[in-house]
Length: 210
Ligand SMILES: Cc1cc2nc3c(=O)[nH]c(=O)nc-3n(C[C@H](O)[C@H](O)[C@H](O)COP(=O)(O)O)c2cc1C
Image (cartoon, rainbow, N blue to C red; front, side, top):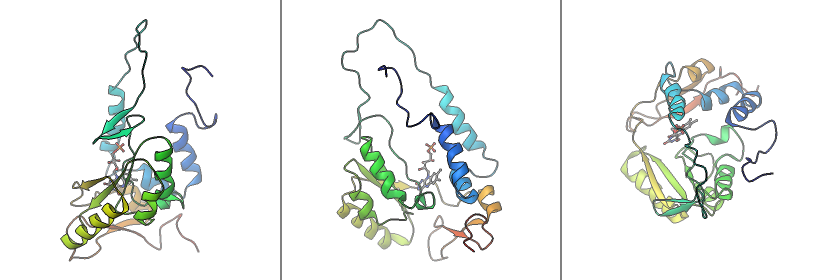
């Protein structure tokens, strides 16, 4: 393989769209739609995808780059290429290994992982799964005391940074989830706005076990 070629795992998975199609075939519809879908008419989702097309590589030939590599630092932590895994709640819906295997994969690739508040695995186990940077994402649920206790626990487990998500004062109307019976419900009125929990209703197609 020449230096210019990309390494691919298999001819079936050459790019992200191939992965998406594979996931669509393998996952229950409700789970695939949760990952793949956005809120309302999904116009923000489409715009986010389109925005990647604004970036192009400018080819440069006959120039000397003796030491090129993609290494960089973020918050003082070194990563092998400029991408870092963002928090994805309910990762365990997609794979039993969920957050643990995602963190391990990030570490093996030389980059970092952000663990969602809504994790299916204990945060200590996720931290232990990677030697790379690991950040903890916090939703401000359950009041100040609960948040402080969670932050302390994440710190003791060895997380390197805290990511506070503030853009979810109310959950968006995710129409695919609603149609699939995956509804987001408030945990309790005593919990600040923005606290939410996915409930798979009895009608949730694809998740039903009986
Ligand atoms: C399925 C899914 C679950 C997500 N879960 C969380 C979460 O638990 N906490 C959070 O702060 N952001 C969450 N996000 C937001 C992502 O971390 C990220 O900020 C967002 O998708 C924008 O990045 P992107 O353009 O690369 O998708 C989630 C996004 C998706 C698609």
